[in-house]
Image 1 (tube, helix red, strand yellow):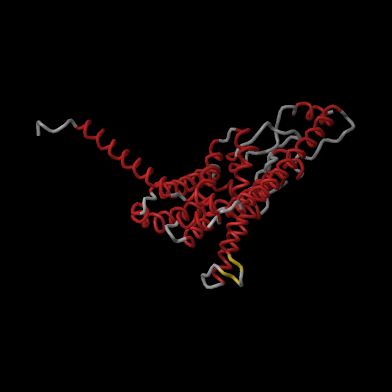
Image 2 (cartoon, one colour):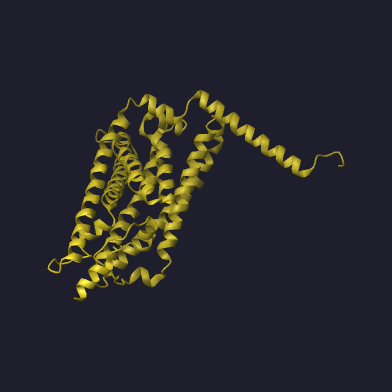
Length: 348
């Protein structure tokens, strides 16, 4: 048709209409209410109070890690300058914590949230899929213990690790987790987030946190990589569990998206909660893709590197920094400037 508008004009018009529809949805959503605002207003500060308490605990763990790094570095410098001072053991627990001072907080978070999440699911099963186990409200346990622990860790880790080390991938991970899970911290927020079904959205949140099991195993794998003296069959077992855990993350998030979240899209659109739904989808896709990335990183060395331990050459000194990808690859051995001094002393 000669009178029809050019194709590029029609495409631009379609894009404008889509953007206009999204803006209209957002305006109506904001005028009504949203899960984040409701959780904050109706929660009466309970979540925030728990968050503050746990944040203090994580700050203490970070300070302990940095203190261990400081005294270890002092011992290294003393050994380099004093022939009578023995060099610290690079495979000792103190040396490993000094090389990665955030490992104390990270390990506590992964173990605590994994135990709480898996424990709640087990107790719910024992209660016949009821959220009340012998008078204990399992949803409240998650809202007042599990989630505040996790959100406080993610925010503190941004300040103590992500920003100083400029680790954008982990920073994005932490922001996604905080933003997507915060509304579950109170019934008012989770009710809107789940379109009236707070139990389903709480279950979805808890299921996501079962993935922290693989993080706990990865931290143990990092410890073995930097402390073992020779090959050990348990090393292969732990490696397989870590890779299976991260592969399981990808499968789990894919399942939650395809069978739990996507089928509810019409309901969220009908209730003008399009932004809420988009954040839910983005969160699961984002964490799933990050899990796939870390799984690929760990498998780059081939099958042999998964089952056979290869002792690393380590120095008594610390390297300037590390990234989460280093931990996934197993490259995070203690190294830093000043190795020459310690090595020269040893040669004497």
